[in-house]
Length: 393
Image 1: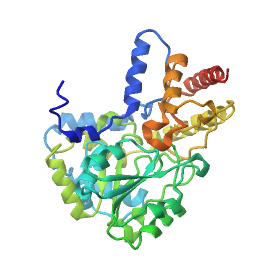
Image 2: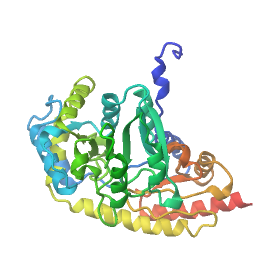
Image 3: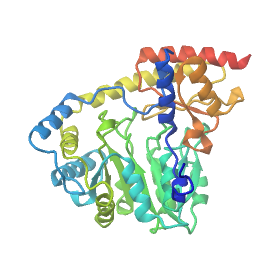
Protein backbone atom coordinates (compact mmCIF):
# COMPACT_ATOMS: atom_id res chain seq x y z
CA UNK A 1 0.00 0.00 0.00
CA UNK A 2 2.83 2.41 0.86
CA UNK A 3 5.58 1.04 -1.38
CA UNK A 4 6.09 4.39 -3.14
CA UNK A 5 6.53 6.13 0.21
CA UNK A 6 8.83 3.63 1.94
CA UNK A 7 12.53 4.58 1.86
CA UNK A 8 14.41 2.86 -0.95
CA UNK A 9 16.96 1.49 1.49
CA UNK A 10 14.31 -0.92 2.77
CA UNK A 11 14.57 -2.79 -0.51
CA UNK A 12 18.16 -3.69 0.42
CA UNK A 13 17.04 -5.85 3.33
CA UNK A 14 16.05 -9.50 3.05
CA UNK A 15 14.44 -11.82 5.54
CA UNK A 16 15.60 -15.14 6.95
CA UNK A 17 13.73 -17.71 4.90
CA UNK A 18 13.96 -20.27 7.72
CA UNK A 19 11.35 -18.26 9.60
CA UNK A 20 9.11 -18.15 6.52
CA UNK A 21 9.46 -21.92 6.16
CA UNK A 22 8.66 -22.34 9.84
CA UNK A 23 5.47 -20.30 9.42
CA UNK A 24 4.39 -22.40 6.43
CA UNK A 25 5.20 -25.62 8.29
CA UNK A 26 3.16 -24.48 11.30
CA UNK A 27 0.24 -23.67 9.01
CA UNK A 28 0.41 -27.19 7.53
CA UNK A 29 0.51 -28.65 11.05
CA UNK A 30 -2.59 -26.65 11.93
CA UNK A 31 -4.31 -28.40 9.02
CA UNK A 32 -3.41 -31.77 10.55
CA UNK A 33 -0.28 -32.61 8.52
CA UNK A 34 2.64 -34.29 10.30
CA UNK A 35 5.80 -32.14 10.00
CA UNK A 36 9.37 -32.84 11.08
CA UNK A 37 11.06 -29.49 11.73
CA UNK A 38 14.63 -29.33 10.43
CA UNK A 39 14.41 -25.75 9.16
CA UNK A 40 15.17 -23.58 12.17
CA UNK A 41 18.53 -23.00 13.82
CA UNK A 42 17.44 -23.33 17.42
CA UNK A 43 18.60 -25.84 20.06
CA UNK A 44 15.75 -28.10 21.09
CA UNK A 45 16.91 -28.07 24.71
CA UNK A 46 15.62 -25.94 27.55
CA UNK A 47 17.75 -23.16 28.98
CA UNK A 48 19.73 -24.70 31.88
CA UNK A 49 17.94 -24.40 35.20
CA UNK A 50 20.69 -22.42 36.96
CA UNK A 51 20.45 -19.70 34.30
CA UNK A 52 16.67 -19.45 34.62
CA UNK A 53 16.95 -19.28 38.40
CA UNK A 54 19.55 -16.51 38.14
CA UNK A 55 17.20 -14.46 35.94
CA UNK A 56 14.26 -15.09 38.27
CA UNK A 57 16.27 -13.98 41.28
CA UNK A 58 17.53 -10.93 39.41
CA UNK A 59 13.98 -9.85 38.58
CA UNK A 60 12.89 -10.34 42.18
CA UNK A 61 15.92 -8.33 43.31
CA UNK A 62 14.89 -5.39 41.14
CA UNK A 63 16.99 -5.90 38.01
CA UNK A 64 14.19 -4.70 35.75
CA UNK A 65 15.23 -1.17 34.82
CA UNK A 66 17.66 0.50 32.46
CA UNK A 67 21.29 -0.59 32.48
CA UNK A 68 24.51 1.07 31.30
CA UNK A 69 24.37 1.10 27.49
CA UNK A 70 27.40 -1.19 26.96
CA UNK A 71 26.24 -3.54 29.73
CA UNK A 72 26.83 -3.92 33.45
CA UNK A 73 30.55 -3.61 34.25
CA UNK A 74 30.57 -6.95 36.09
CA UNK A 75 28.94 -8.67 33.10
CA UNK A 76 31.45 -7.18 30.68
CA UNK A 77 34.29 -8.20 33.01
CA UNK A 78 32.92 -11.75 33.08
CA UNK A 79 32.77 -11.84 29.28
CA UNK A 80 36.36 -10.53 29.03
CA UNK A 81 37.57 -13.26 31.40
CA UNK A 82 35.63 -15.87 29.45
CA UNK A 83 37.19 -14.69 26.16
CA UNK A 84 40.66 -14.95 27.66
CA UNK A 85 40.02 -18.52 28.83
CA UNK A 86 37.92 -19.84 25.94
CA UNK A 87 39.34 -17.93 22.96
CA UNK A 88 42.86 -17.11 24.13
CA UNK A 89 42.29 -13.36 23.69
CA UNK A 90 43.70 -10.74 26.03
CA UNK A 91 40.91 -8.23 26.45
CA UNK A 92 39.17 -6.10 29.07
CA UNK A 93 35.68 -4.90 29.94
CA UNK A 94 36.35 -1.63 28.05
CA UNK A 95 36.45 -3.70 24.86
CA UNK A 96 33.11 -5.48 25.45
CA UNK A 97 29.69 -4.21 24.37
CA UNK A 98 26.63 -6.22 25.44
CA UNK A 99 23.77 -6.15 22.93
CA UNK A 100 20.33 -7.80 22.53
CA UNK A 101 21.35 -10.81 20.43
CA UNK A 102 24.10 -11.41 17.90
CA UNK A 103 22.60 -9.53 14.95
CA UNK A 104 23.18 -6.03 16.36
CA UNK A 105 26.92 -6.69 16.27
CA UNK A 106 26.61 -7.42 12.52
CA UNK A 107 24.57 -4.30 11.84
CA UNK A 108 26.61 -2.01 14.05
CA UNK A 109 29.90 -3.25 12.60
CA UNK A 110 28.72 -2.42 9.07
CA UNK A 111 27.30 0.95 10.07
CA UNK A 112 30.41 2.09 11.92
CA UNK A 113 33.00 0.84 9.40
CA UNK A 114 31.53 0.58 5.90
CA UNK A 115 31.17 3.65 3.70
CA UNK A 116 29.20 3.57 0.43
CA UNK A 117 31.26 1.72 -2.16
CA UNK A 118 33.47 -0.11 0.33
CA UNK A 119 33.81 -3.81 -0.39
CA UNK A 120 33.04 -6.47 2.20
CA UNK A 121 34.39 -9.96 1.60
CA UNK A 122 32.26 -12.72 3.08
CA UNK A 123 31.70 -16.48 2.72
CA UNK A 124 28.84 -17.73 0.55
CA UNK A 125 26.68 -19.65 1.40
CA UNK A 126 26.46 -17.99 4.79
CA UNK A 127 24.05 -16.45 7.27
CA UNK A 128 21.75 -14.36 5.02
CA UNK A 129 21.75 -11.30 7.27
CA UNK A 130 25.42 -10.66 6.42
CA UNK A 131 24.55 -9.62 2.88
CA UNK A 132 21.56 -7.60 4.06
CA UNK A 133 23.71 -5.64 6.48
CA UNK A 134 26.44 -5.02 3.89
CA UNK A 135 23.99 -3.64 1.35
CA UNK A 136 22.07 -1.58 3.91
CA UNK A 137 25.30 0.15 4.92
CA UNK A 138 26.01 0.96 1.27
CA UNK A 139 28.77 -1.60 0.97
CA UNK A 140 29.50 -3.91 -1.95
CA UNK A 141 29.18 -7.64 -1.11
CA UNK A 142 32.10 -9.74 -2.41
CA UNK A 143 31.23 -13.42 -1.94
CA UNK A 144 33.80 -16.20 -1.46
CA UNK A 145 32.27 -19.48 -2.68
CA UNK A 146 32.27 -22.36 -0.21
CA UNK A 147 32.01 -25.81 -1.79
CA UNK A 148 31.58 -29.34 -0.54
CA UNK A 149 34.60 -30.32 -2.63
CA UNK A 150 36.69 -28.24 -0.21
CA UNK A 151 34.72 -29.30 2.90
CA UNK A 152 33.26 -25.77 2.91
CA UNK A 153 36.62 -24.25 3.86
CA UNK A 154 37.76 -20.98 2.26
CA UNK A 155 39.81 -21.28 -0.92
CA UNK A 156 42.74 -19.08 0.05
CA UNK A 157 43.79 -18.33 -3.55
CA UNK A 158 40.25 -17.21 -4.38
CA UNK A 159 40.21 -15.17 -1.19
CA UNK A 160 43.52 -13.52 -2.08
CA UNK A 161 42.20 -12.46 -5.49
CA UNK A 162 39.06 -11.01 -3.88
CA UNK A 163 41.01 -8.49 -1.81
CA UNK A 164 41.19 -5.15 -3.62
CA UNK A 165 42.09 -1.55 -2.73
CA UNK A 166 38.37 -1.06 -1.93
CA UNK A 167 38.20 -3.90 0.63
CA UNK A 168 37.22 -2.53 4.05
CA UNK A 169 35.98 -5.56 5.93
CA UNK A 170 36.32 -9.36 5.88
CA UNK A 171 33.74 -11.64 7.53
CA UNK A 172 34.68 -14.97 9.09
CA UNK A 173 32.04 -17.38 10.39
CA UNK A 174 33.58 -20.27 12.29
CA UNK A 175 31.91 -22.76 12.64
CA UNK A 176 29.67 -21.97 9.71
CA UNK A 177 25.95 -21.55 9.36
CA UNK A 178 24.64 -23.17 7.11
CA UNK A 179 27.38 -25.70 6.27
CA UNK A 180 28.66 -26.76 9.68
CA UNK A 181 32.14 -26.37 8.21
CA UNK A 182 35.05 -25.40 10.44
CA UNK A 183 38.09 -23.40 9.42
CA UNK A 184 41.26 -25.04 10.71
CA UNK A 185 43.98 -23.00 12.42
CA UNK A 186 46.01 -23.20 9.20
CA UNK A 187 43.09 -21.57 7.33
CA UNK A 188 42.97 -18.69 9.80
CA UNK A 189 46.73 -18.24 9.59
CA UNK A 190 46.50 -18.21 5.78
CA UNK A 191 43.79 -15.53 5.91
CA UNK A 192 46.00 -13.56 8.28
CA UNK A 193 48.93 -13.82 5.87
CA UNK A 194 46.81 -12.33 3.08
CA UNK A 195 45.68 -9.44 5.28
CA UNK A 196 48.89 -8.79 7.19
CA UNK A 197 50.06 -6.00 4.88
CA UNK A 198 46.63 -4.36 4.75
CA UNK A 199 46.15 -2.76 8.20
CA UNK A 200 43.25 -0.75 6.76
CA UNK A 201 41.11 -3.91 6.51
CA UNK A 202 39.03 -4.96 9.53
CA UNK A 203 37.72 -8.45 10.33
CA UNK A 204 34.39 -9.43 11.86
CA UNK A 205 34.70 -12.91 13.33
CA UNK A 206 31.32 -14.53 14.00
CA UNK A 207 32.05 -17.12 16.70
CA UNK A 208 28.51 -17.79 17.89
CA UNK A 209 28.94 -21.57 17.41
CA UNK A 210 32.52 -21.91 18.68
CA UNK A 211 31.53 -24.04 21.69
CA UNK A 212 29.68 -26.47 19.43
CA UNK A 213 32.71 -28.08 17.77
CA UNK A 214 32.96 -31.86 17.82
CA UNK A 215 36.70 -32.33 17.38
CA UNK A 216 39.25 -29.88 18.77
CA UNK A 217 38.67 -26.16 19.22
CA UNK A 218 38.11 -23.13 17.03
CA UNK A 219 41.05 -20.77 16.60
CA UNK A 220 40.11 -17.09 16.62
CA UNK A 221 42.04 -14.68 14.41
CA UNK A 222 41.84 -12.20 17.31
CA UNK A 223 44.20 -14.51 19.23
CA UNK A 224 46.94 -13.29 16.88
CA UNK A 225 48.33 -10.16 18.61
CA UNK A 226 48.69 -8.16 15.40
CA UNK A 227 45.03 -8.83 14.48
CA UNK A 228 43.40 -8.37 17.86
CA UNK A 229 42.76 -4.63 17.45
CA UNK A 230 41.50 -5.08 13.87
CA UNK A 231 38.94 -7.74 14.78
CA UNK A 232 35.36 -7.41 16.00
CA UNK A 233 34.25 -10.65 17.62
CA UNK A 234 30.57 -11.54 17.51
CA UNK A 235 29.39 -14.00 20.13
CA UNK A 236 26.44 -14.65 22.38
CA UNK A 237 24.40 -17.06 24.43
CA UNK A 238 21.70 -18.28 22.04
CA UNK A 239 23.31 -21.45 20.70
CA UNK A 240 25.69 -22.54 23.45
CA UNK A 241 23.21 -22.14 26.29
CA UNK A 242 19.89 -22.66 24.45
CA UNK A 243 18.95 -19.01 25.04
CA UNK A 244 17.67 -17.97 21.61
CA UNK A 245 14.67 -16.09 22.98
CA UNK A 246 16.62 -14.28 25.69
CA UNK A 247 18.23 -11.99 23.08
CA UNK A 248 21.66 -11.61 24.60
CA UNK A 249 24.91 -11.24 22.69
CA UNK A 250 28.09 -9.23 22.72
CA UNK A 251 30.88 -7.79 20.65
CA UNK A 252 34.56 -7.66 21.59
CA UNK A 253 36.67 -5.01 19.85
CA UNK A 254 39.24 -2.26 20.41
CA UNK A 255 37.97 0.19 23.03
CA UNK A 256 37.84 3.02 20.46
CA UNK A 257 35.51 0.96 18.25
CA UNK A 258 33.54 -0.08 21.33
CA UNK A 259 32.70 3.58 21.96
CA UNK A 260 31.21 3.84 18.46
CA UNK A 261 29.22 0.64 18.95
CA UNK A 262 27.98 2.02 22.26
CA UNK A 263 26.78 5.13 20.41
CA UNK A 264 24.83 2.97 17.96
CA UNK A 265 23.33 1.04 20.88
CA UNK A 266 22.18 4.15 22.73
CA UNK A 267 20.54 5.46 19.56
CA UNK A 268 18.70 2.22 18.83
CA UNK A 269 18.19 -0.12 21.79
CA UNK A 270 19.27 2.02 24.77
CA UNK A 271 20.55 -1.08 26.55
CA UNK A 272 20.18 -4.83 26.97
CA UNK A 273 17.72 -6.13 29.57
CA UNK A 274 19.10 -6.20 33.11
CA UNK A 275 17.93 -9.64 34.18
CA UNK A 276 19.11 -11.30 30.96
CA UNK A 277 22.59 -9.90 31.58
CA UNK A 278 22.63 -11.40 35.07
CA UNK A 279 21.48 -14.69 33.56
CA UNK A 280 24.27 -14.47 30.98
CA UNK A 281 26.84 -13.93 33.70
CA UNK A 282 25.59 -17.08 35.44
CA UNK A 283 25.79 -18.96 32.13
CA UNK A 284 29.49 -18.16 31.77
CA UNK A 285 30.48 -18.57 35.41
CA UNK A 286 28.23 -21.46 36.38
CA UNK A 287 28.47 -25.20 35.66
CA UNK A 288 28.99 -26.14 32.02
CA UNK A 289 27.57 -29.68 32.23
CA UNK A 290 24.47 -28.80 30.19
CA UNK A 291 26.62 -27.43 27.36
CA UNK A 292 28.62 -30.65 27.18
CA UNK A 293 25.44 -32.73 27.28
CA UNK A 294 23.94 -30.74 24.41
CA UNK A 295 27.12 -31.07 22.38
CA UNK A 296 27.22 -34.83 22.94
CA UNK A 297 23.60 -35.12 21.80
CA UNK A 298 24.28 -33.02 18.70
CA UNK A 299 27.28 -35.20 17.85
CA UNK A 300 25.23 -38.39 18.16
CA UNK A 301 22.54 -36.93 15.90
CA UNK A 302 25.13 -35.65 13.42
CA UNK A 303 26.80 -39.04 13.16
CA UNK A 304 23.47 -40.74 12.49
CA UNK A 305 22.11 -38.13 10.08
CA UNK A 306 25.17 -37.81 7.86
CA UNK A 307 25.60 -41.56 7.64
CA UNK A 308 21.92 -42.05 6.78
CA UNK A 309 21.84 -39.23 4.21
CA UNK A 310 24.87 -40.62 2.38
CA UNK A 311 23.06 -43.94 1.98
CA UNK A 312 20.27 -42.25 0.00
CA UNK A 313 20.76 -42.55 -3.74
CA UNK A 314 21.45 -39.11 -5.20
CA UNK A 315 22.39 -37.35 -1.94
CA UNK A 316 25.90 -36.66 -0.71
CA UNK A 317 26.81 -34.81 2.46
CA UNK A 318 30.06 -33.66 4.03
CA UNK A 319 30.58 -34.42 7.70
CA UNK A 320 30.03 -31.09 9.51
CA UNK A 321 32.59 -30.43 12.21
CA UNK A 322 30.60 -27.87 14.18
CA UNK A 323 27.26 -26.15 14.83
CA UNK A 324 24.14 -28.32 14.29
CA UNK A 325 23.58 -28.18 10.54
CA UNK A 326 23.97 -30.60 7.64
CA UNK A 327 24.27 -29.18 4.13
CA UNK A 328 23.71 -32.09 1.75
CA UNK A 329 24.04 -31.81 -2.01
CA UNK A 330 20.86 -32.56 -3.99
CA UNK A 331 22.33 -31.58 -7.36
CA UNK A 332 21.73 -34.98 -8.93
CA UNK A 333 17.95 -34.52 -8.90
CA UNK A 334 17.99 -31.75 -11.49
CA UNK A 335 15.73 -29.30 -9.67
CA UNK A 336 16.53 -26.11 -7.81
CA UNK A 337 17.22 -26.05 -4.09
CA UNK A 338 14.13 -23.96 -3.41
CA UNK A 339 11.87 -26.34 -5.36
CA UNK A 340 13.39 -29.35 -3.62
CA UNK A 341 12.83 -27.81 -0.17
CA UNK A 342 9.31 -26.66 -1.01
CA UNK A 343 8.23 -30.03 -2.35
CA UNK A 344 9.94 -31.85 0.51
CA UNK A 345 7.72 -29.93 2.92
CA UNK A 346 4.51 -30.24 0.90
CA UNK A 347 4.90 -33.85 -0.20
CA UNK A 348 6.95 -35.45 2.56
CA UNK A 349 6.32 -33.31 5.63
CA UNK A 350 9.98 -32.42 6.24
CA UNK A 351 10.75 -28.73 6.72
CA UNK A 352 14.18 -27.77 5.38
CA UNK A 353 15.78 -24.61 4.00
CA UNK A 354 16.83 -24.38 0.37
CA UNK A 355 20.52 -23.66 -0.09
CA UNK A 356 19.99 -20.41 -1.98
CA UNK A 357 18.41 -18.95 1.16
CA UNK A 358 22.04 -18.57 2.23
CA UNK A 359 23.40 -17.12 -0.98
CA UNK A 360 23.82 -17.88 -4.66
CA UNK A 361 26.51 -20.50 -4.05
CA UNK A 362 24.07 -22.49 -1.94
CA UNK A 363 22.33 -23.67 -5.10
CA UNK A 364 22.31 -27.46 -5.27
CA UNK A 365 22.13 -27.90 -1.48
CA UNK A 366 19.58 -27.85 1.33
CA UNK A 367 20.16 -27.09 5.00
CA UNK A 368 18.94 -29.53 7.62
CA UNK A 369 19.13 -28.61 11.30
CA UNK A 370 19.70 -31.60 13.54
CA UNK A 371 18.51 -29.65 16.56
CA UNK A 372 15.73 -32.21 16.82
CA UNK A 373 15.42 -35.59 18.49
CA UNK A 374 17.12 -38.68 17.12
CA UNK A 375 13.71 -40.35 16.72
CA UNK A 376 12.45 -37.44 14.60
CA UNK A 377 15.63 -37.46 12.53
CA UNK A 378 15.05 -41.12 11.72
CA UNK A 379 11.50 -40.34 10.59
CA UNK A 380 12.80 -37.43 8.52
CA UNK A 381 15.43 -39.57 6.78
CA UNK A 382 12.82 -42.18 5.92
CA UNK A 383 10.57 -39.48 4.44
CA UNK A 384 13.46 -37.88 2.52
CA UNK A 385 14.44 -41.23 1.03
CA UNK A 386 10.89 -41.94 -0.11
CA UNK A 387 10.58 -38.44 -1.53
CA UNK A 388 13.79 -38.70 -3.54
CA UNK A 389 12.59 -41.94 -5.09
CA UNK A 390 9.63 -40.06 -6.54
CA UNK A 391 12.08 -37.62 -8.16
CA UNK A 392 13.94 -40.48 -9.84
CA UNK A 393 10.85 -41.78 -11.60
